[in-house]
Image (tube, rainbow, N blue to C red; front, side, top):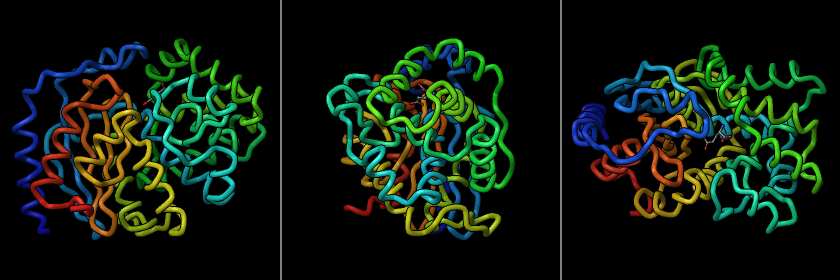
Length: 308
Ligand code: GLU
């Protein structure tokens, strides 16, 4: 695939789906409902470090659940994939991203690190008795992935902190079943802060591209995750990256991806590139409508589905 074809496909997908009116911004976190629904950006970063952008790719928005893939990388590097598998799980939940029923059905085991329960459990495994030390560990890893320091969006953090009773409930439930490994409220707070990190679509494409190279940031050339953990992280994305939309996504695209309720999606094409797309309106599973449409078009146009 050449760079010009990739750019043309990105531009065509942006032109085609810009006018799409389906979906609604997330509103259970009030700050996300305020974001301009028209925003739409697509970025790609190749394993050689070429960066391509179309649309609103410099706008900063909340990373939300896409952060779960990166905190998972840190936990896996520190503890090993088999520990994560035992203490968190590696199965599709088949339920919504914040499902309590999924927990109850499996004796409190979160099943997957990319749903809220699994991500809170994963964060609780990152060493540090105090909030500051856990947070420092996490921030250092995110900085390596992005190639620069990310900042917490205070309005999103405050808004999410004021409305995250459900996640607090999940943390106490995990704790009661023995699947939480640090203080429950500390873990939820770190998780919430991590979800409130501001990223651009371009940042996300760079971060995703670190998986396409099997662990090296293609811009800084530094290793940011152990190579042996990458296929497990990408497998988790294939199982659960778009929650109850994961099966539809996989049928259409055959590639690992991760969405966030801020409207972003990253998609990794191993050994080639990563793409990111952002637009706030979501479908009922919590995935950006325009981002899914655009990425699917690009993947099809360029024949990037490895299963076809
Ligand atoms: N911070 C959000 C929550 O906990 C993340 C959800 C998502 O992006 O899917 O609900």
